[in-house]
Length: 479
Image (tube, rainbow, N blue to C red; front, top):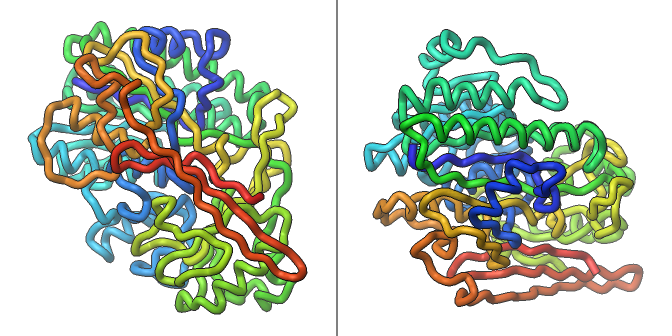
């Protein structure tokens, strides 16, 4: 194995310190750390996992969030992007994604990508949807691709343990699968381990509370054991290791039932009224209006603007311009499956009881628990670092990077030449023979919009950073 990617679901940069994560902190101190790393928006897991392993913005790859409507699949259905439904989509449409992912690309060169994860089935499936035919593998507690692999893994490492919070036994099982089977027996070119913590514990107990702290410490212990083991296996002793998380985190200040609110003000008649389909995604909500009608979408936007919990909003090209909103293309979600109106909940940088910044309204969960999904700077900023023979030593850089850069960086690191267009960029400044990060030109842009009415006003600002042709969302806020 030449490259191992380790993802810590929901890990924030501030949590990588000597107290919580001594192993990860130590390894990254000897490697590279990028402090200005970005999720794609909405800042939920399955869309970010897909962008990581395609190198494309969400509008390009076709996964809009965790909860979506896919009009090319079933126009009137709001569903959670999970493996059984994704299998149905593939059966009907031929492919789930609009683009090739890392497993497909590596297969073109006779190389293999294997992914082992303890998270949701949708997350795992989207890491390599074609693992059943591209020579790779995806392993999750609920399913395995290719299907024939499940029996072999069971004979070597046993059954998946039951899920718990913190999810300690399943994290260890991921390490066992990778180090006892995939690396020594299969020797994939690229391997991925997806630790489901601290995300599960943040959702269950809040950011910075007891369960989350336990989860982070155990995930770090598991990580330390993983690195110790791969360095003792001949196939992986010189592997480069890339560390990443899918999104940051905030704390819920209030829970909003969007449909109920729209019924109260008369925009929807009742629970069965589907002229506006609502897909809740924690800190954001996606809206699909009947026939993408501009008049109805505008009425929806005007209604939302009057609520204090409504934050930044964006319109699709299909719907057409809505005064006061910004175009979806600015945030990378414009494409065939783009929602008509996308709304992030309002957020601020106040601290929770554990001292972590970021408070937000949410479409689910409970007050004081953790969530994500919004366009807040606390959720759009996440973790990226690396160490190994091909990476610089002791580099800390504030040059903007993003989840969308992971696959282009892997392809570049492997020395593979492909004409596949990526939205992300190879992070050359991290490599031993790469450019000096201080010489990279960064462009900061602000985009503003407003709508002023006699009874209320709505103003918002989006801030982005760009390196070359790759754009990163820093945050957007309602003023």
